[in-house]
Image 1 (cartoon, one colour):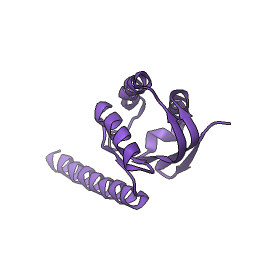
Image 2 (image 1 turned 45 degrees about the vertical axis):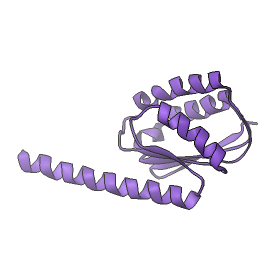
Image 3 (image 1 turned 90 degrees about the vertical axis):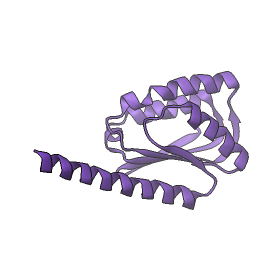
Length: 144
């Protein structure tokens, strides 16, 4: 049985990991996401590690996953996306923030211990991005 579940909702998805998670599991979950046609319409997503008991990733595994992560934006049509990583501890938050800092910079991503703060950060960012897009569209129409 795979240690993750993907739940799609409107223009988002939540990827829940549990139990023992390895590099192969992270890559398999990402591959499943990018293979789904709904990925082209997402505006935000959550990776939830709150029920992970063992995260088996060596430094080499993290280098591989960082390289894998670097090409992810090529598979997504939208550029205005926000991603939140929900984690159970400050130690795991530091771990994922190092990964996010080393990974792609195509859209904002951040790790949070609090699910409520993660949700607020994502929703505030999506509202800001939507408003910026609307203003850009208005300016383009005014120029044309």
